[in-house]
Image (tube, rainbow over the protein chains, first blue to last red):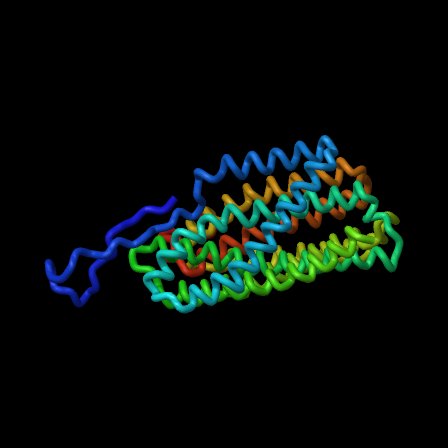
Length: 207
Length: 132
């Protein structure tokens, strides 16, 4: 998942002087060991949709949506403020171990939720509802679209750029901090937008 | 750096707006004028981005292709799933054509955005050419 390397000595340090170099975590961009798990989840999703298995489709939508919402809120509102108070070294080590997992986790949860959600809406006849009820469906799509633009346009690029920066022999700490701040803020915004999704979804499920 | 990221985000928003417009008309068939206009504007944005990228000489092309390539692979799978669901659900004809165009634009745009977002902070490629 992540390797550790000896951090290079500062330019001002005389040769052989001082302590042993501190170890720095060099993140893997994609945690390859997690890929089989993602493949199992995606294949299961395709099979569930192809078989029109209502229980499985419902499971994918509820579990995917719940985890997506929970992770977004947890990262944006709980982890974010904690990260902001950590030392740069601690923040860098946390990010190196945390961000690669997010590269796999979030797209998988989003795919699970959206693909199964569409099929579920079709099965339950929600897509065929007349207006004004249909506005709830349209509103959910608009909220998801805004979240997609934020997540794919700002959050995920920041995630990847941090991982690549951290793999450099001498990473730009200021750049990493700027991108991490963007990652945390956008995760928080999408988390708050998830609350709007929860309002819409619970309304649709109970009418 | 040219505004590749901003244009890519705009392209994404246009493609999503096209998809929402079609879905908002269900179960009735949507008038295709607006979605066709949106996908055309999105495709034009992709072309502008391609031109802007092609004019970059001092750029980490090796990183761009590495990230965009893997992201492209992932988005081929995602786009394939969306296309499969639409065909499975009985979408046909001109509507399927417009939706497929929206999906293709989306699947090309995101890898470009991710590749550019990472490569802009990396050391330029020694070859300094888009195909490097």
